[in-house]
Length: 313
Image (spheres, helix red, strand yellow):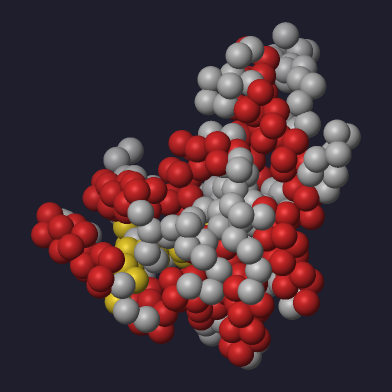
């Protein structure tokens, strides 16, 4: 036991700092580590070596949990700890499929959504799950916000000419870095990925990366901070899980607010939207909206403010 009554931190030979005090940046995650890998890849290899969700040794398990706690604290310092402080940060999430290709219609729609949200007269802070596909697109759009939209469209076209991340991860990453360098400095946005999906490429368009070991903490926390709403672009099973978790958070006002849920595309989300609306309470139903364009997304978010709900003492 330490003199201050706290347990000392675990000794770990891992490539990460369990007691870090700041969020990650793309540059830090992509910097080389002692073994020649990027820090991001070195932590992923270490995580897999220690059995991912079920670490094979107590010190490693504790170190991972302390790391995620430290990341939580750094995020609170950035966006606020209380619901009211987080509402003032004006965070809107963009969720959707990781398999969407650069340049696809869904990618372009998500990028334009991020661009328009972050370009609003009172800008929103865009947050995503930090992966490829729709998530990368949302951060890209926010990164290039406040400029002529043709610059964003040109950046997407340039990215679309490169390989996909599963086919050639190195070339995929390099194409992103070239676009980020050509269009910098980038405007703020947040990515919240996890080493549980450590095979996914580092997001180079987010300015701040909130990276966890625990996917459960990441999923719950990402939805919880987006008090000004979440936009659902086309996605599959993972996005559906987020939709129903978000709906439950709204139903119970788990984090002190109820927030808009905006579904982008009737073809993908028409039936799900009707299901949610049919069983929604009177406090939730007005916050559900189905739209077809990024412009309609922004209008829906601006028309539907987060609703504060008194919590039991």
